[in-house]
Length: 108
Length: 127
Image (cartoon, rainbow over all chains, first blue to last red):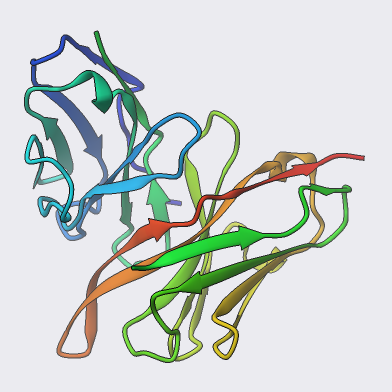
């Protein structure tokens, strides 16, 4: 099976930059997508195709990918950005569609 | 505006078969380059992709659960149904359905992502 690895937690103060990483062997060939999930809610897409931001997502959210490592960056994190963040991608064949283990972002 | 909503039993017994329905609006599964997927999330865990059905009735399943899953669509009702056999307490989770977006270049899908998701439905497996 295929795995995406994320740090379990990231903590920043309000206004600081938060960076959440996701590593996977297929990332040089496959896009990564990022989801935000607040407590009790369904996941919401915040980045698609490595670095594209859907309409309605604040500009402070950005994404990048290089080699086997993808990064979600929240520039000037706000208290309302506290959530679990999951990366999503596939293996090189597209058969295994997987989510990373998730990163809990604390902003305080 | 695309919306999806899951429905089905909240409690199933071990070894029973679970049947969940996803009712959606804002798009049609008769339209090319459209798909609906099912994803579940056990309490405190990451989401886990289960199954996907495309506009042309092509189907994909999680390799680890393939033997237990069946996904079908009813385009006249704008519904997608997932069945999972031989339920076990470890299958207790919130089950989501989601619309899948694609980027297709020269007939090849080069990217795809789930957006939006339904609100999810919690299924508990217990005797």
